[in-house]
Amino acid sequence: MAKIQIMKESLANKIAAGEVVERPASVVKELIENAIDANATKIDIHLTESGLKQIKVIDNGDGMDKEDCMLAFSRHATSKLLDERDLFRIHTLGFRGEALPSIASVSDVHITTSNGNEAGTYINIKGGNIIAKKQSHARKGTEIQVNSLFYNTPARLKHLKTIHTELSYITDFANKMAMSHPYIAFRLYNDQRLLLQTNGNNNLLNVLAAIYGINVVKKIHKLEYSDEVLSLKLYISEPDMNRASRNYVTSIINNRVIKNYAIVKAVNEGYHTYLPQHRYPIVVLDMKIDPLLVDVNVHPAKLDVRLSNEAHIKSVITDLINKKLKELMYIPKITIPNKKALEEDKGYVQDKLFQQSVTHQRDIGNQDSDTQDSISELNAFDQKNANSYRELEDSTKNFKDSISEQSNHNDYSESTYTETEADSTPKETVTNKKRLPNLDYIGQLGGTYLIAQNEEGLFLIDQHAAQERINYEFYLSQLSKTINEFYDLLVPITLEFTMNESLIIEERADVLREIGIKFEKFGIKSFIVTRLPNWFGKADEKYLLDTIFDHILREKKLTYKQLFEELAITLSCKRSIKANHYINEYEVKKLLHDLETCDNPYTCPHGRPVVINMSYSDIEKLFKRIQ
Image 1 (cartoon, rainbow, N blue to C red):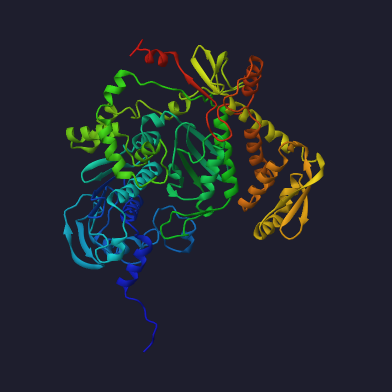
Image 2 (cartoon, one colour; image 1 turned 180 degrees about the horizontal axis):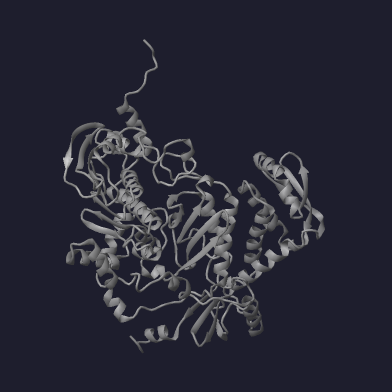
C-alpha cells in the first residue's frame, strides 16, 4: 500500500484554516471582503462575546443562487479568477476560494442568500459537513452567521486572547475597511452595543470623524499627487496629533488595506524631527496603482504586498508630507476648555473606562500619558459620537433615517465638515522664509524659557530646543560642504573594540572614509585615527568618534548621508545652551532671529516643541474673567 495518500477534503480545509482563520477578526475580514466583492453598499456586523460565540455579517450585495451558494463552500471555488492572466490584474479583495470552506471546517455556519431573481437559499454547514439546505424567503443580499468558532480545534480556541483583545482586532479591521471603502455604510455591534457607524457618502473625512473624532479631523490635511505610476490621496495629521502606535498609519492600495514596511518608513521620514521618539502620526494613504505593479498573492491573508516602483512611491510620500509640514505655521496652543464644554462632557469618564477595558491590550508596552486616548481612538470610539449613535438607535428603526438624523446631531456630517475645510482651516500656511510671528521679548523664566508676547497672546520658547534646531540645520548644511577639509592629529586617537565589532568596522570602512575620517588597524581589535574633518572641533573629538562608531555598529545599512543626519543631531544637542543658563538680551535677539530663518522652527531635532502659545482668552479663563 502506498505511503503517500491524498488528504481528505475536510482535513485539507482544516489545514488551510490554520493560515486563513487565525482568530475571530480573520472571519470578519473574509466575510466583509466577500460582501464588498458582491457590490454591497451596506454592511452590518453583529458580534456576540467579541465574535467568540457568534459572528453575523449582513449585506445588500448581489447575493447568490442555490448552485453558486453550494459551490462557494468548495475549496478553490471562486468567481473572481478565470485564468492565470487574471492573477496579475486582481481587482477584487478575495480570489483564492479558500475562506468560506476554511471557516466552515472549524465552525457552525448558517448562510441565507438571494440574488433577487428567485427564491433564496439557506445552508447550514458544521465542521465542513452539510447539515441542512433548503429554499428560504430572503431579500437580495447575503446573511452569514458563524457560530462556535474553533469548537473542533481546541488548541486554537485555547490560544485566543481575552474577549477585549479579540474585539480590538475586529474593530481595528472594521475601521480600516471603512476607511478603504468610504462609499459603503458600515455598522459594527458587539453584544448589541454600537461601536462604529459610517454613512457611506464617499467622504473619507466623515469616516475618520466616526473613527477618531471630530477634534482629530480638524487637524487632518488632505494632499494629492498623480503621475503615470501612482495616484495618491494622502491624509496627514498635524504633528501634535500623534499617538503611541504605528497602527494609525493606514495604507490602502486599490481599495485594499495592506501592510508594507517601506510605506510606513516613508511616512515616518516625512515627519522626521517633527515628532518625539516613539510617537506616530495619524495618516491614511489612499493609492491607486496599476494591478500589474502590485503583487497581492504573497500570503493567504492578502495583507502583505510587493510593489514595483517602491522607491519612487516612498520618495513621493516623504516629500509630500515634508513639504506640507514646512508650510504650516505650527505652534502648539495651550487651550483651556470652557464651562459649556465641560458640562457637555459629564459622564464621559465612565464611558472612557469601558473603552479602556475593550482595548487596553493594543498598546500595553507604551505607558505614556497619551496611551489611553490613543487606544480608545484606535477602536472607533469617539464616545460623544457613540452616545449619539445609541440615542439615534433608540429613536429610529430605519437605517437610512438614522443616517439622515445623524447628519443633524453629529458635528462630522457632510453638511458641516468637508474635505475643503480639512485642508484650509486648521493652520495658517507660510509663504516666505520667515516662519514665526513677530514677538516682543519680555524676559526669561528659570534660565530655561524665553517669554514673549504679541497680539495672539503669550509665547514660551525653550531656549535649548531653539538652539538645537538652529544648530541642527546649520550642521546638516555644513557637514557635506566640508567633506574635503581635514586636519591631522598630532597624537592619534586609539579606539578598542571586540573582535566582532572590529570586523564590522572593517566591513563599513568606506562610509567612515567618505565623511573624512582616516584610520587604520592597530593590532587585532584596535584602530588608530590619524585625520579628522574640520567640523569635528578639537574639544569633542573622542566623544564624536565614539558616537560615530556606535552608529556604525548599530545600523546594518548606514549611508554617509544618514550618518550626517545622526551627527547633526548629536552636535546640535551637545553644543546648545543648556537649561538653567541665563542669556543676555543680545543673545536672545540673535537666537530668535536665527530661529525665524529655520526651515522648521517649531520642533527640535528630537521632535519636541520649541514654541508654545497661550491665547489671551485662555489666560482670561484661568483668571475667571470669562467662562
